[in-house]
Length: 107
Image 1 (spheres, rainbow, N blue to C red):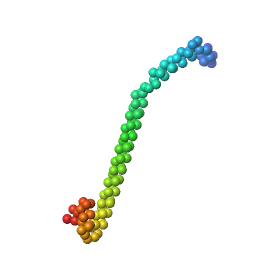
Image 2: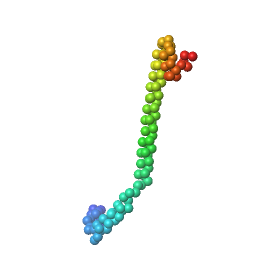
Image 3: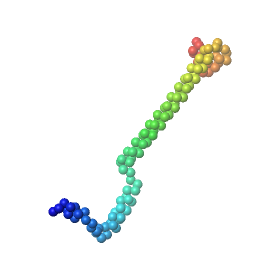
Image 4: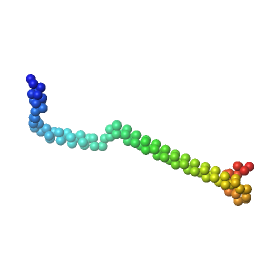
């Protein structure tokens, strides 16, 4: 036999058996009803990974904000110390230094 003839015979159109469309639609309706609210394992893993990633990024952002505020506070304290060291301490400045916790630098 010729290859073209075999392919034409194998790929020739044939009509579906009677009731085929009804059976397919009925089965499709059953599978959709049973799988409507089920999560697969891969979907749950993806959701868990997204939650972990979001928490990690949130923690990193919070840490960076805390570090930035700490650095700004230390810089402000150094500037205050420099300003107070540049002048002879008066009673008012001594009181301010006590409040700021800088008096230990003078003793």
